[in-house]
Image 1 (cartoon, rainbow, N blue to C red):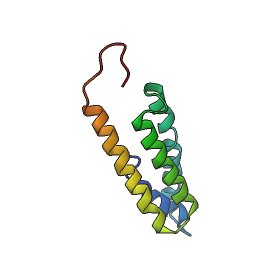
Image 2: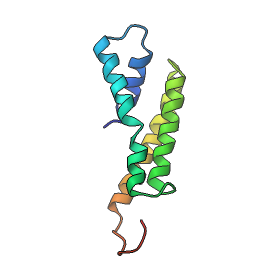
Image 3: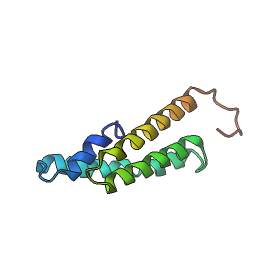
Image 4: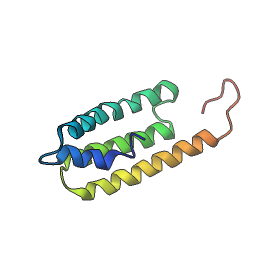
Amino acid sequence: SLLASGPTNLRTLHDARPDAEDRQQARSWLSQVFPIGQRLQLWLPADHAVVVAYEQVREHLVAAAEAGTDDSMVEPFEQARRRFLDVSRQTLLSPIPDKGGSM
């Protein structure tokens, strides 16, 4: 998954001399990760638990990217990612509301 490869791609982006192909893949990864929040909002309101959890993942990802080689910022990202996955799973497994109801 895109979020699962976050720590690896962050390390690649901060590596002093990464392989050119690896760096390109990591940059491509960044361009794919950030629009996910907008895609979620096509289906869910901005205050839905899944969207809020994803935004928290994104915020931690930005903080980890800005921290450079400080690996201590990866753990909060991974915790937020696990929470996002748990909230998403719970939402997907919930009964579908009646027509006209909200999720």
